[in-house]
Length: 188
Image 1 (cartoon, rainbow, N blue to C red):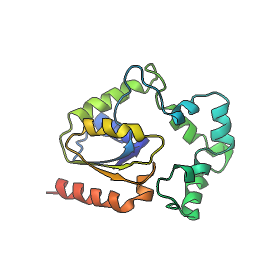
Image 2: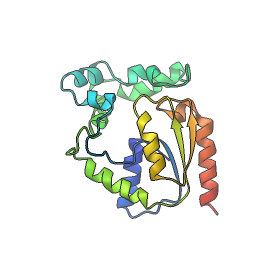
Image 3: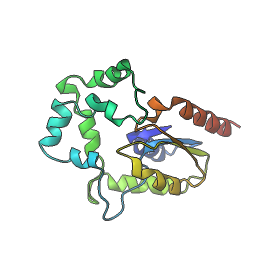
Image 4: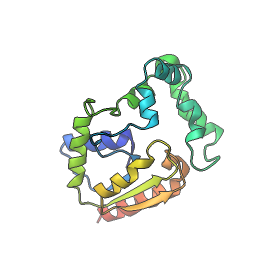
């Protein structure tokens, strides 16, 4: 199961540890490296903007305080859900993580993460095992990466949902169905 930064981190971790991946369920993540001339998403471009990004992410607790804007299915987040996403990052000293992660996304080809992203993409290009892609079609950040992911994993069936970025939050039944299919295929 990989989602968001868990895509690169999970695959790179398995790859570097020499572990075999038996099956994959991919949800709104990037597992491909950028190509020359790419433009970062508005979200990731914003994270690279000095002072403004620090104010938004650190002072105004972006994006946690605004998760409702990122949902694709209206009212799919309860008040408790929203509080649980914000709670660990509620203090200024604790909320540097989202900005640091956003800045780890390349904004140009000389960004330090591009090399490992190329390794991950090449590793997955040779992966022929079972896979499913469960994609939130209303993701305002990762929307343009679905087709690249499908080309990288041609054996994967794509399950399109009305979710935004957090597919597991908004369409958990679709995620569980895909998990069960892949687990069944890998446990034979």
